[in-house]
Image 1 (cartoon, rainbow, N blue to C red):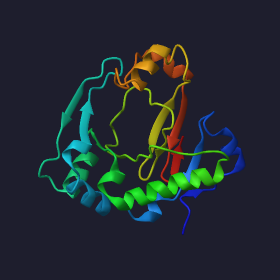
Image 2 (image 1 turned 30 degrees about the vertical axis):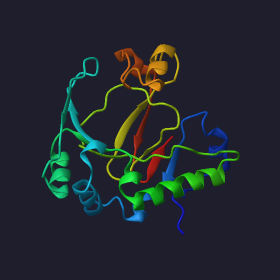
Image 3 (image 1 turned 60 degrees about the vertical axis):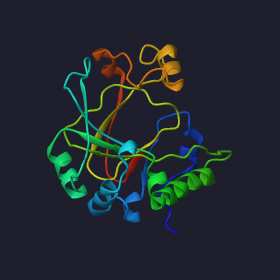
Length: 205
């Protein structure tokens, strides 16, 4: 079986959970992330497990709009996303298609094999299909997230998980489910962000 983690090393294992790690992967080799495979997945995806969104242009005043795929074919949906300014977020993919659950389990099993003492739970996989020009505004994800790029280049801004970038009250609200992931933002924060251009075959955690 081909490993999905590509070039993971002991230094990354030591830093895991303590720092931002940029690493390589072989998700493309699974064949589950081609346009054809994703088109078929979209056509059979339950409406309650996806969101298709767009937003405004001002990060200090985001305006959200949500739509639906409806009867649009998977291929046409991908083409519309490619030409538009939106993203499709398919949540809990492993519960919908067992092939993706198998890949997800392999990823976490590999992490457990290279990081001493790591035991994982609540394994979850989401797939984002996004337009080249779309921007996701300032927000905080709870610990344990990773972002895996398969196609295109995504510029990612990462901020320290501390004041003034993230308050304890905001983090508590997100974890407790009292608020969404969006948190107060000031343009001056960007001067302190770590900026990474995430390329195909790379991932961040």
